[in-house]
Length: 207
Image (cartoon, rainbow, N blue to C red):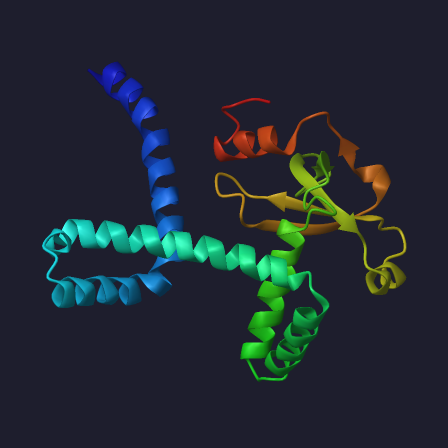
């Protein structure tokens, strides 16, 4: 009984977690337009005398689907316009206005910089997997090289060469940022994806 339950849980859990993540992202992108589209559909039903839209489940699904399609089209359109000079100038002006707004400007600047770093196609956020002595010289932790040490910090600590992010397990979205000399960092031939699997499983799934 115990072995059967464990096997069933192992088979079911990946599907459940995947469904939860997809559902969360789906709701996140469709919620802004969902209520508006649902109101329009109910108005069409009332004015046109349609009975198909009277079903609550269908109205909900149709509203979510249309909201997702419109959000996708909006993102593509925004990206297309973002490559045009006139729109880029307008966006720059809007950014400057938001940056000058207290509190909101700080939050916007932070999210903008993080999003640009994570989704930029020019460089990888996590460049390579490394092993680094942490939290003591006798023990080692898995980390990711994220870049070079900023000049201002380099002046204070000249021996540092690179920034290493050491994530925690099993939730690698949190961790520690270390400024380390290159000689203390040991490169390993393991992909970033396999390293995340290793961390999420607390070392059970080995790369």
